[in-house]
Length: 236
Image: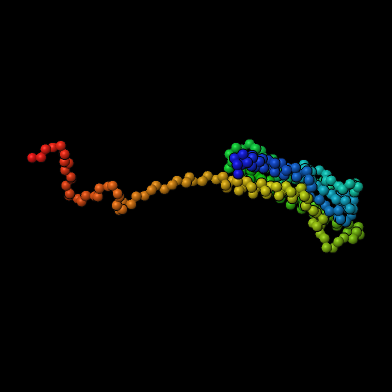
């Protein structure tokens, strides 16, 4: 790969985290949970055949759900389709925003990878907790609704429970997939960016027992040193 192509790939990878986390935030505008259209007698503000959907924003701040067009009706006495604000989902959204900010602001590669992965993991955990609590709340409300339907003589499907009418929305699933992808990619990046010991070539070893060319052999202990001879001196 050429130097230019490598720079393009690295630059594109630098924006992977912000763009993916931005998509995760956008998922809060999609349905997180819904009450099925085949709920006996409808549910709250939805007449029979209509679907009641709660998106992520409505769950974070609390509010009324969206109802299928043409199936709106006044909420029957004794029922309420409003859900209170969900702190766990609000915490998930805050963690996603913080992870996006860290992906842009933190300069150190390894610190950025670790911070983004940790915040994304916290966001995913809060997302799961919030979804479980919302589904449990709607299941309890649907149990009361089905009990009233049975008391009014409405025929119920004996093979279904209240939980079967509560469905997980695509917004929650897509957000969870994106956060899992961010955790996985940054976890690998954090591991690959770890400091490695420098590779230093070992010093060459010399075998002192082997003969070495060009060197005088060792003298034995007690031998006399050689006498220097002057070639210009006259012989006597």
